[in-house]
Amino acid sequence: MGQGITVVGSLNADLVVAVRRFPGPGETVTGHDFAVFPGGKGANQAFAAGRLASGEMPVRMVGQVGGDAYGEWLRQSLSRAGVDVTHVRTDAAAPTGLAMVAIDAAAQNQIVVVPGANGSFNPAALTAAHHAVADAAVVLLQLEIPLPTVQTAARIAREAGAIVILDPAPARAVADVLLRSVDYLTPNESELSVLTGGAPQATLRRGDAVARARQLIARGATRVLVKMGRQGALLVTESAEQLQPAFPVEAVDTTAAGDAFNAGLAFALGSGADEADALRYAAATAAISVTRPGAQPSMPSRADVESLLKSGSG
Ligand code: RIB
Image 1: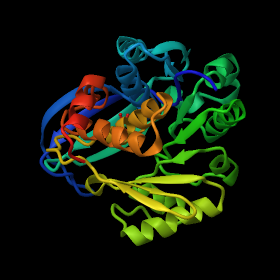
Image 2: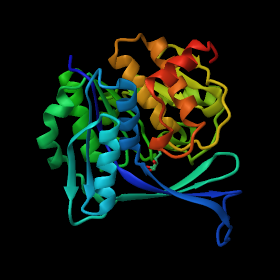
Image 3: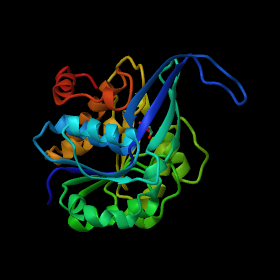
Image 4: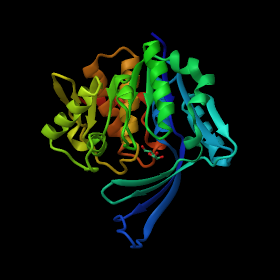
């Protein structure tokens, strides 16, 4: 088995506005705050894992930025968290990925992503990063880069014996061959609904979530871990289900909570924790992230997570 964590995925600059409520179609509302934060689902997961690992295990980012100032800024953000950015390439012909994020008074978010250089990160680009993927104990994937690249990374990781965690976000139809390469598939309720042929739904009843998770298991997924916000995370296998409750916290910004969760899960599993402990670790990492604004700036240190775990809640 390999060592450390490798993330193959997206890097975005997040342009974030705070609004009291989201505008409807054709409506203009006035925001009361604006900030630019380092983001992107892949980079957020790498950043969070880097903070948790704090140099004790390698964390590597594999992805692509554009030839603009945001690209270098995103590399620097990851480096500051101890992430190896050797395999973050530059596509000089493309802009760096951008996300327009609106946060409302209830800490919910709406996100529009413009892929830029993430969209031209093709499977051939993985050749140079083959070792970074094959040498990892845990590989983290999401769906903000082209699907063939995700599938290639999953295949390399699976063949090398790594634990593969796929965050199917943003939701889109995925092939059974990809589901078969994944150890943990981690949709939220809306993504689970889309993956099983439905319309996006913000909430699902537990029984419905289990039934839909089992449809994905019948197609080849091993474990489906449904992120259900305040209700916690529901681990579904062919024959069992287990709820990891969420830690009760005051949320200010839920952006990247799912990324924090996956990074916590990867770090705990990569450190040899058993599954139940890894789920609790993931829940604690996500809980802290929602108490702080921004994507990468909201990611907790290992000491933050350990202190919440010791508090005994959740
Ligand atoms: O998961 C949160 C992320 O989604 C944001 O940082 C934004 O970049 C989008 O990719």
